Amino acid sequence: MEWLFILLIVGFIAWRMMPAKGVRSVSTGDLKGMLKNKSVQFIDVRTPGEYKGRHIKEFKNVPLNTLKSQLGSFDKSKETVVICQSGMRSGQAAKILKKEKFTDVLNVTGGMSAWRG
Image (tube, rainbow, N blue to C red):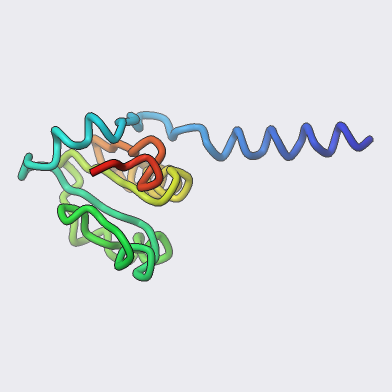
């Protein structure tokens, strides 16, 4: 019975980490080459405290819990890159963006934990 519980937890975590349909992943190495592109929208979905502690200047801080209310300030047709600390919250944000008809959404693999900039 214990192994079944563990299996369910592992399955749930794996399911939560799966990218939304139509969301691409981008490495932090590839992200470095994208930062100068003015036609790309960059969204950091961490808390204001996390963002203040360390962030990439091109990213606008829009905490995940406020993302839906701020969608109007973004262009749905532009390439949109989302980041968080590890990739979990940005994965959730990417799902929200795709559901709201954003056409080109990328999630940064590993998030700020993987960033070496």
